[in-house]
Length: 457
Ligand SMILES: [Zn+2]
Image (cartoon, rainbow, N blue to C red):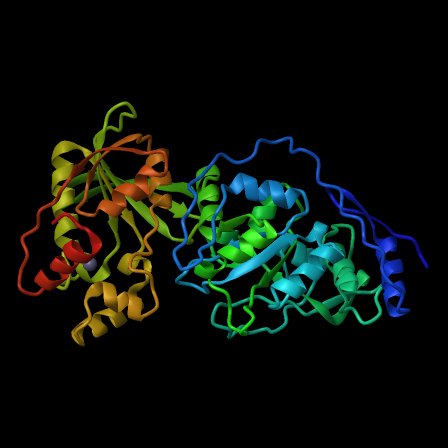
C-alpha cells in the first residue's frame, strides 16, 4: 500500500495509519485506539477580544462561552456546539475542524449527534477543487448548498465507517488534495459556504467556516445537527445536560457575526454629493455594505468633530411611510422632523435600507395584511416567522465611525437602537426624542410600539 504522510496546517497526521486501521476493521480485527491529533501550536496572532456572551432560554439551556475559549478548543482538535438563531432553524450542531476530523470525532458525532454529517467548506476551496453542486437550481427553503457527495479514492472500502469518513474529510481539508483524490458519489457531504460567510447567511455552514478562519485553521469543517432520542431535533433550550455530560464549549452564530462586525471593515464609502432638500442642505454620502450588498446613505449637515457629540438620526427605510406618507406608521413624519432639526442644529441622518424592520417590503405588506385581520405589528411579524425586529445596526455603526463620529446625541424613540449602537464602539451620550402627533390611522400602531417594543412615545 502506498504510504501517504498527511500533514494538516496545524498538527501532523499519518493517514496510512488510518488506512491500516480500516483494513483491520474489515478483517474483523479489534482496533487499537487511534492516537489523538497533535494540538495546533499556540497562535501567533492574538485571540479575538471578548465579545458579548449570549444567554439561552429554556428548561435546560446551553451555556455559551466567550468565542476565544471555543476557538481554543477547536485548535486543540476538540468538538464544540454551535447554535443558530432560535427564529431560524433553532438547531444545535456538533462542529470540529476538518483537519481534526479524527475517527474518534466522527464516531462521537455519529453516535451522539445522529444528524447528517456534513463538511462545510470555504467557497474558494469548493471552487478550486472543482466540486460540482448537487443541484443546479436550489429549491430548499434555506438554500443549503450541497455539492455532490464524495469519498476519498484511496484507503477506502465502502467509505462509511468513522475511519473512512475521517480519511475523506481530512483530505477535503488538505489544500494539496485535488478532485483526483476523490470519487463521486460518496459518504461525505460537502457544503459550499456563501462568499461573505455569516455576514451574508447566518447558517451553520458559514458559521463553521468563519470560526475556523478566525481560529487560523483550514476553512473546512465538520458539522452535524443533534437529534434527540425521540427522533426530534434538539433545541438550544434543552441541551444543557448533554453539554455538561461531554464537557463541550458552545457558541452562537450571533457571536461570530458580532466578532466579524467588530474586527472587519464591512462598509465602503462610494460617493459624496451635495443634496439640497425641502428640509435643508446636506452632504450626501453613499456607502456600499458588504453585509447586504445595499447602498446606504448618510446626509450630513455641518462639520463632524470626533471630540463633540453630534445629533444623529438612524432611520430604517420605510418606502410606504418615507415616500408615500403612509399613515399606517409614523416613519415619514419622523424622518422629515429629523431632517428639519439636523439642518438647523447640524448633524447626521443615517438612512439604512432595511425595510420593515429588516424583513423586506413584500413581507412588510404581508404583515400589514395580518394587521388588517386583527394582529398587532409584533404578532404579525411573529406569525410570518420573523423575529420582531431584525434590524442590524452594525453597518450603521461602521458608517458613523467612518464619518468620524464617536459621540452621539441620538434622535430616536426606540431604546433598542441605543443598545444596538452602543455595542459598536459608539458612545450614545443622550437620547433626544422626536415627538410626532398621533392620528386615527396610526394610533394603534404607536400604542403597540410603546407597549410591546418599549418605545418612548
Ligand atoms: Zn414605516
